[in-house]
Length: 78
Image (tube, rainbow, N blue to C red; front, side, top):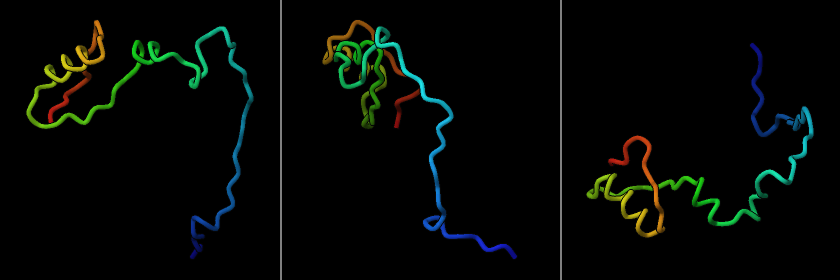
């Protein structure tokens, strides 16, 4: 029977197939991206408490963050 090695004893190596550079005229580096860009294209991962509806929570976020548009994907129900 073949012996299985412990995972911490297996020697691993990183394989890089290609190195590429991004044209700096497209977008931002993450550490330099303005907060307005995060707000425009971002996603908020929210753990909604029981009680308020998904629609209510979305309305609260719009008001708190001064957003014109917001929505939720799927259900936020507990």
